Length: 199
Image 1 (cartoon, rainbow, N blue to C red):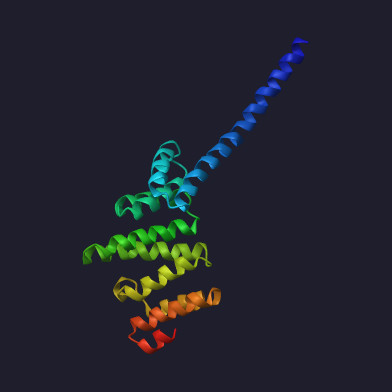
Image 2: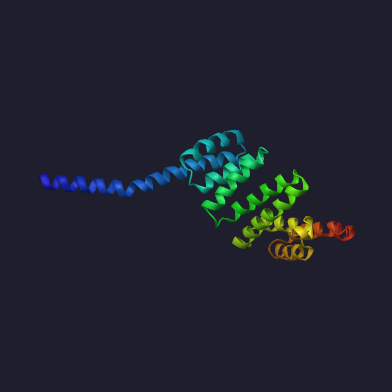
């Protein structure tokens, strides 16, 4: 009887041991889902409090870092946004959205910087958008971001009208409406206002 009790106890311990990671993971997913819901519901103040607390206990979670970056970017704290989004891309290098939003953070900060800082930021913007498109060719936000970079950046910083048109063609294949907008932007930058209006 004693051996049977010991055996049952051992089975119970092993069951708890193997089940525990799944329980913890499930609770963690539920927890972060709450934060995401707050963010999507535009309850940004509550979302910020949630992710600030969550990130302290889950420093290796790329999703937490990503939303921290998004929230800091929304608040205009570009350095913090970049730090968190860089962390997200390091924790999960394969996520296209993380690279796209990192590129946006670099870009918004560069718009408010001097010419020298813009020149140094251009490399990071281009790299982030290109990586986002490489990881997910169907990420039209990333393609549009890359197109805008190619259109607005001087050639010496990596701008290219030809590459911008290539992106517009790819966007058109996936979404005709966004394709017209993409070509309209290119025409406008080339001062082809008739074609831009038509697009």
